[in-house]
Amino acid sequence: MNTSQAEQPSGDEQSRRAYARQKRALHLANMVTATAALGVLAWSPATVKVGRMIQRRTKRRPLATAVGLLATAAFSAGLSLPYDFASGYILERKYGLSNQNKRQWFGDYGKAAALGVMLLLCLGSGFYALVRRSPRRWPVLASLASVPLIVALQAVAPIYFFPLFNKYRRLEEGELRDEIVTLAKAHAVITDEIYVVDMSKQTKKANAFVAGIGSTCRIVLADTLLDNFKPDEILFVLAHEISHYRARDAWKLASISGALAALTFSAIAAAGEAAKRRPQSWQTLDEAGAIPMAAFVANAVSCLALPAINGMTRRMEYAADAYAATTQPELTEPGVRAFERLGQINLAEMAPPGWVEWFFHSHPSLRKRISALQRSRRAAPEPDTSGSRPWSDGGEAC
Ligand SMILES: [Zn+2]
Image 1 (tube, rainbow, N blue to C red):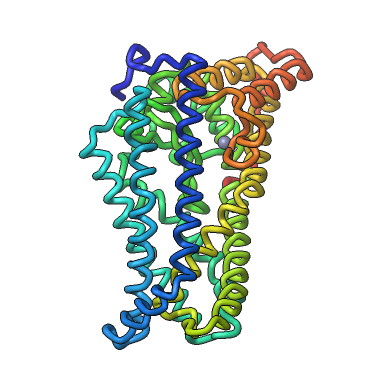
Image 2: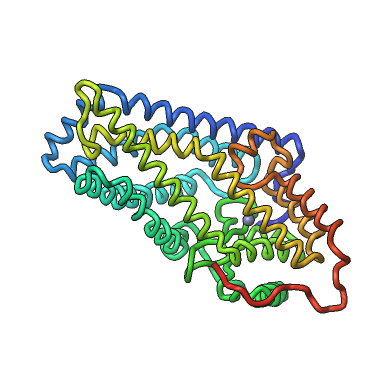
């Protein structure tokens, strides 16, 4: 807990808009460059030749596939690194949001890349083994296998992956803890499942989220949130996260990811059939030269599906705000303050252009969330100030 309000960025409207515009331009440029470059690589005759050379040198098909996976990942990472550095390091420093120096930033980037390579080799090798064994039925089998895999990755992430980057600890004793415990118990949430993360290691931005799934599901509050928000604002944020937790939103996200995986596999199968008919083309999807095509299709499907996925997550966010406001009307006004403070601290654009929110944002704009809270405050009966609290009891966690 080492941030202070005095160190926070200025957060005036002009800087917020400039910050958002520059972030967005980099994100969009990265997306277009990555998709276009993978498209060129996928359909280039040189890729087929390099793929055959890898096959000759490695002799064994699974090894050639692994080399193809690594080469394609290195190509994509090489293209994205300048954008990631500009967005994640230069802009964050320029706007006074970062708590990292260059070495620390590259340290986290390297760890994320190593984790990505490990997962790519494990999951990619399994995927291509399935393609070899079932050349016709693999899209259905891979779609079926993706659901338990997504759930397993979501379950282990807070135990094995997140601690590579930050320290997670259970909430300490103290006055705020007592209020948090009371609130959590009223919503049938076990307080052992509330954690604090040292997000101040990387950033001055504040955040809270639900991580894990099933028995590893937990609510995580950033130390930057606890340091910079008033207790009643923190309680509103917690009530919002409790709604995600109780509504089993982690399972909904896993289902959405499963549907996206099924769509991606169908698109790869269709594009693969078309690509094979080209003269001098590779003949099976597991050839090293075919891997850029699968990467291009996966990239294009995830870009095209982004607005639909963001539309679904924005609905979950509105529902979580509504749950917090209706179960605890006395926290609605602190909720409005929390959103305003969040905009200030995170340099968030309060009301981005409509198309930007539709395409890029997983959360509704802060202005819309504040308006929804104010509407619910006007519609709700006067808060009960007699001491008895209208919080629900019972219910299941995610
Ligand atoms: Zn949320």
